[in-house]
Image (tube, rainbow, N blue to C red; front, side):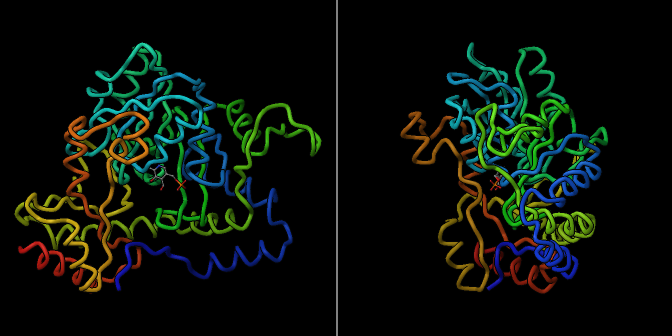
Length: 369
Ligand SMILES: Cc1ncc(COP(=O)(O)O)c(C=O)c1O
């Protein structure tokens, strides 16, 4: 079976993780600040806090941005559920708006139309590693006095047209390091903060509300346990050393898929880079021809030894969101149309040429092209 995803872990990862394991410093040790500093250096960002997951990072980021119970926050329904859930943790309401049909990112125009009197913030997501229109979102946020938290969980390595890495525009930004991501720490994530003071708040809240100079059992604010352990940081350090190689390997696989599947009638591929924006390849998601039965395709692909997954489902149509907020089909037609046709193909750095060929051939046979 060709799997959907597989982390690339080699000798350097083994070496650093083993060294850390043998050091006896498994948590709150030296690997944590080392990982934060190296990640910051790689991004060109000064204030980075490593946390236990992307979701934990989003939670701390919206808190640091000033979210309050009863706030409306505009976000995209075409995302992993965590980008909306983090708002619910704080008693705010996710207000969804439709997406851009080319990039699949939040439409700035639709975001503007979705603002209410209670809107205080906006959470754009760089979906599938393609940079969201941050210039447009920042204009909107400036005009309307909104905070911005960027969900860059899928976008480590992506670059905006002006040359700035995604996640470094001065908003709070969040990355995630689950094993299917461009860089993995196992579970893990990171927040990029705009100042030392915000980083200190995040560092405190990830560690039960303890300030750096406080005794072990003294706490001056509400906090959580969102710490990232040193073994994970060691893994992340090794992955950071190899990040360019890992990103290039992903881009290579994407190019092979592009060659094998380009020009097939009715099959839409991920959009190419445009206007100077550069995608960091996270997944390879195609949109099947409209008449094709996606569920049957998943089964037929599995029978041919290829794992695929409908990805992503629209958040507003998930049962929890429907029941809680009364969402129905038809609210966000572009998102719903994409979500109904989207299929993730096997995608990871070490996917062999022959496997890409097998996936492509199977897909074309299954969809009758
Ligand atoms: C867009 C997006 N947001 C948030 C997350 C949450 O990250 P994690 O799974 O590390 O909590 C993910 C990861 O899957 C994601 O893809």
